[in-house]
Image (tube, rainbow, N blue to C red; front, side):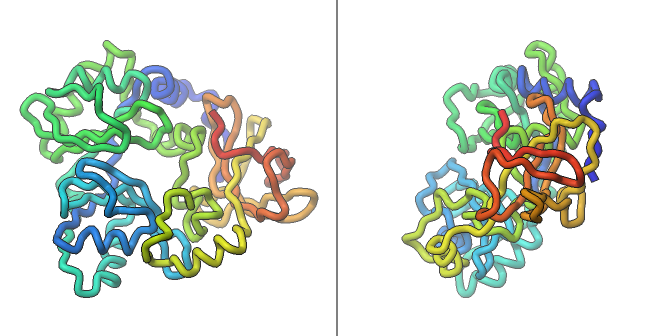
Length: 338
């Protein structure tokens, strides 16, 4: 159940605006699976619809993972560290291991859960590069988006990925051994003031307000949908075989029956149930007809109003429609708000 308790919370607003205007840093470790072996590339290319074989060493790629029905069961970032060595960043590493076990066949691969030996800090916002350059042994001025490099903070070895979940054009992730994370935190805290940066402590800011404003999504938004319904069909390599391809080709030919749209609610104090809080989410009603359900709802500090996503029937909805959600008037929008 979402109730707008965020708008007048000065701590949340300050942390949100730090990421948008200067920089914010926070501990936010995804789960990591390391996979290697001579058949690692072939296996990943079969499991994921986006191309993995074309990924260069030091590069990263976002992709969904589908079941045989063409429905999304995970979304991940894959880092190619070496020719036959990858990291897979996920929130569901045990399910991923089980899925690989079920589909690897005779593939010569090895994989291990390295979550417990790898921590991650996000550094996001317009001045995040300046903050990192102040603490890293090697500057990251020329590091391109979706790449990962070896670096050091003092004598501590780290990996730096240029990426993030805030929608900021400049943002990084620091991967470090857990026993060394205190040094990373100390260096970030020591240098943050010079750049007007803040440590972000509010989980709602890390995963909801920042991400939702920029069109980023969670599994509550895209789980058990197909890529066409949620705008994730671009980048799929149709020239290779992958799990779910046959079912997805049918959707491609017939068109998606649902779509993930954004919505805004001008009223300040609202109660809206959404999937990210558990349950099925409140109904979305357009022209008196039930057309879908809310997947996520939060307050957008940059937008200045309540915002969210809803999975709705394509034939009955379009951007600009007025909807009713739990008695509140909403306007259906594109998913990118700022």
